[in-house]
Length: 505
Image (cartoon, rainbow, N blue to C red; front, side, top):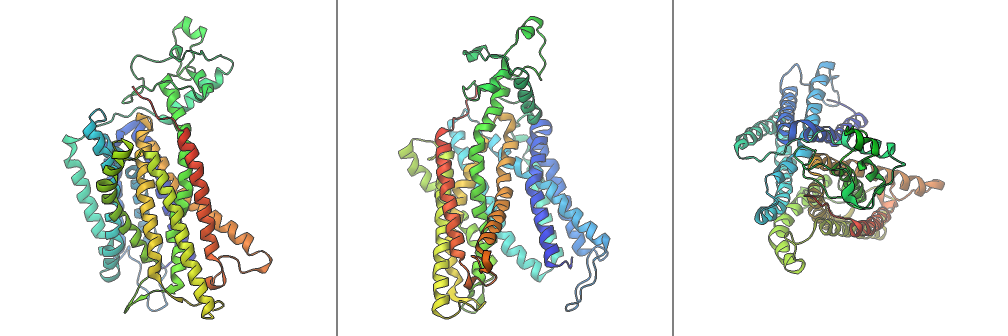
């Protein structure tokens, strides 16, 4: 599009943010109206049309920007902008229906009443994430090579073709699928509980929970009834049958809610602290595309006769995931099962906790590498020169590998946790909320960076992260993140110990 660095960066971050906010829309549509199957089908088709539009923008002369001649780049026409961004945001919209639904729809295919299927469901989440990273590895290697050597038309066209094949494959399995019926708007149900409990603020909640209002069968389509819990009794007021309602026999859903409705909201509130700790982990994860790359640019990027782009080392994160998923599923889980007695070796909460601990190690590893890099810069008299230090960039591999191991535990643990613990009729919404931690983690990373820069550059000092990293202390920044991650892990442990599992009948 011949854009400048600032404009291009702004468009990329805006689009990426949209990709992580759109799942909230897709999740509500799936849970409330269409169900996961039709949501995936419709939004995948939108995604496919988006890829086709991008392909046209890179192949049709009228839609394709004229190539630059040296440093002279012709102005991109409004029509070319319109076609390109229309395709780009069709993809973002399509992502909104795919991301929150695919993992949940896959897990829906397993019967929780069958012990063998229940055990296989745990493996499903592992291999689902494995397949995502296989795709990421192909896109970051083969497709990048295609784009560089064969052009953007092929670079967009090949993914469009495979997306079409994927949609056809999805539809071909229709006769075999198990379907979860949509249960109506979860947001409406939550608002009803809040309004009803507020209206009955002066009504006393009975000590006996069985006296609270509940129907014989679940009032929510496709959802099991939830058992009453003693926490957050103020919300129980919404399920108290008033004398007037008992006499008239007329119930308004904005005045009286079922126990299951109330418990749905309680579950989301109980899940919130666990969800919030994922934001800090995502901030650590975001370092791979920011500070890890900055660090790598100040190291020796040559290996033999090859020059390694610092950003390409994130491939080792993908390789780490591809390595750890089968190791975890085939080796670690069976061994852990003997000690814990749990079908999946570790509970979802234990698994996420392990991932948070590994994230601390990842930041510590990055800090140690930076300490050595700065030490070498001082020894060679390079501290005030904006040049790379002769320390191989391959020393960054452990920190990328540790982030990958943390992913396998935390991100996959989140997929399991938000599926298993969410109310049956809110599984897509809870999956979307889990994805939201990635976006918020990026924002948190930017905020931390802004705060660090503000305080460390006061008084005219270079600060921890100056333009010339040889004059700074990027190691302090990594130690700060390690400390923040450790504190986050301690908070998580407290929240996980206090967390009460969902009880459904």
